[in-house]
Length: 329
Image (cartoon, rainbow, N blue to C red; front, side):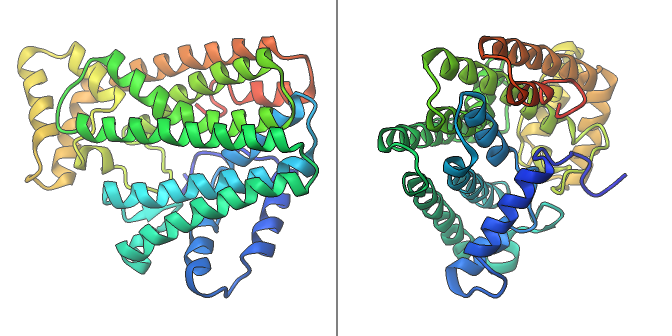
């Protein structure tokens, strides 16, 4: 088992192009704010945002040259969000290395995340210079902004849901806005820049929302199925976050066991490892892992079906491949 079991999404061509862009913009040894920006970007993770933006654009007739700056923008904005998330969640590791706030301190990491956001806006604006029509760039900026606000609202809801149990449907609605909107940010920007019509953009909206739900469930499962993804496996339990495997186990448990799950979520005193071990035992005892995995497969099937509204192409096929169980979820 490797340190990071979840595969990189981007194919070799996209990965190479993006690495070259980042190295050109933020070469090794850059000082000040850009040093923190580069630390967040390198080494690369799954490159899901950039890859989705490029494939979505190409699937509706766009071209790589005008979309590449947007791919950089997506990586910047999403890494900036992760830099802030690590502070909120008190996670000391990201992409199998120390998180930015551990290396630079929380104030600097917050500013670094902000810097990544603004670099992202600037990179998206460069699509106009690369040949994209101005109206498409403006529409893509609107997608980026609205998706970011949707993610922020869901993040606040998640914080307020901590330390307690919620209905499964409430949780699924929250992650649709949290992780679904994260993927929509990429698919929406790409398909808009590529000139997609209303039918295509709507198809990408459904695809990204449903794939995002399945992807977040996969992330939930990493705490309990032995997968390593470069962040602490105890994070959700430590922060009292009611993830899907926990909620499904709670639905199936006895009254006494349900009370125990609720106590573990509310507990902020017992050492996190002890809480995690107790929670993992309850999740496995009630098949929370398999039940959550089945739910993710249901949502990924809906995502795959949404792509049928797009014209056939190699790019549509590549997007559909992410919706094959075992590939990403």
